[in-house]
Amino acid sequence: MWQDFLKSFIPLFVALDALGILPLYARFARDLDKAKRARVLRDSIVTAFLVTLVFITIGNEVLLYLNISIYDFLIAGGIILFIISTRDLIGGGRNDLAGQEDLFAVVPLGVPLLAGPAVLATSLIIFNSFGFLYVLFSLLLNLLIAGAIFKYSLTILRFVSRRWVEAISKVFVLLLASIAIMFIRTGLQGMRLLQ
Image 1 (tube, one colour):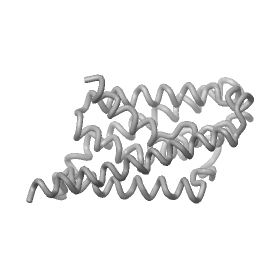
Image 2 (image 1 turned 90 degrees about the vertical axis):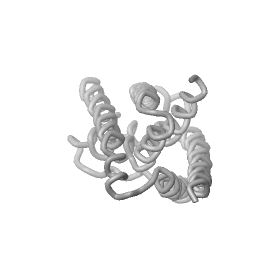
Image 3 (image 1 turned 30 degrees about the vertical axis):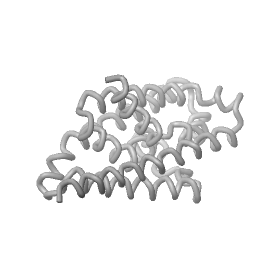
Image 4 (image 1 turned 30 degrees about the horizontal axis):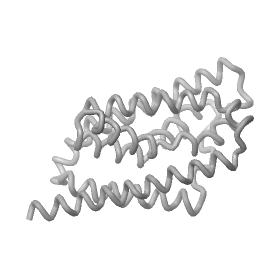
């Protein structure tokens, strides 16, 4: 049970990449007062949670309707995660502030920075591999950790330089690329078993 939880928690932790989003959030939040920062943080976490929950709830029905197997999704999700991680490693990714200031909590912070393609694909794969409770608790815990990181973002960046945060983020992105390869490998093995 503990091992299955770790297998659910770690991929989501890596896919969420709170440390990678930290400099962007801090840059935006430093000009807000304490109450506005708290509201932005709360709204972004709630948005990411609800979007991901809706996706894993209806995602399987959509796959079933389109006659897509979990192995197909593992391969496709793995390829997407690999492309996202490669883009982040090579191009830097996630540095643009899309949307207006009053919508920052929902777009781009809630979606697609927190609940982006990597988190959605990983969540659905975990849901199909381990079940709803594992993905629910893993998602909640990861969003709480992200919330804590963002809440203390200005303090963290005072003690740790932005370069160190970005370096740690790149290590997490490399782990995400490795997890993507594992998803592809598992999907290919599963398809071989079906034949």
